[in-house]
Image (cartoon, rainbow, N blue to C red; front, side):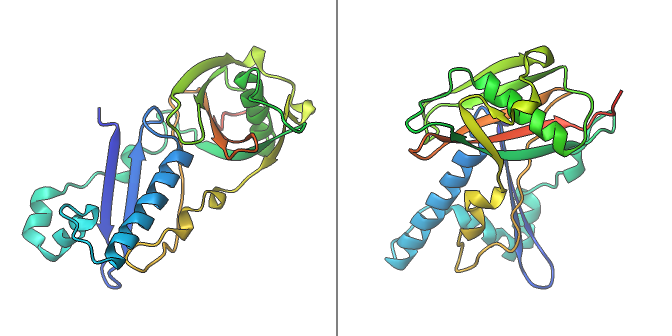
Length: 232
């Protein structure tokens, strides 16, 4: 199974492009991937401004669209709906939270599962869910640069904190927007994207929580993905 998939599509008429990047959470979390793409775009622009020769530019694939025969030989189509939805027809939704330390100078959370459980509880409330996932996985990214390693923990519904607490123990939670990651500001060939979207896919009936450190102030971005199961 491929851990990374890049799909580049050119629209007829205006000549615009759609770029899709999909990868395993064990390879990169959404925040680290966004920072990598922004850093690459800045480096590419700086090299172009200095007229430096790029032996193997990443955007060389764009030239395939000018050579139809090469495009047919070197690309393949993958239906987008092959990765969407679920066998039982239940959709999944992701809510992004920002977790701020409740006290000044608070360190890393003693238990990421408590923070993750609070985010799952609030996500359930937002969608009016009356049934909690039986269990969910917690992916914890160590280090703000994404290089500190990634761990995976499991949490059961019985171990979730009560949603009435309104936060994750040591942290205060507030709903965040994906735009805060800054990918909409990425510039490629003097153009900015007109639309940016993010998606996290979990398996089965399980929920999935990704805990990502953000900055030196001890804050975290937490993406809670839950399946919209019917209430009992």
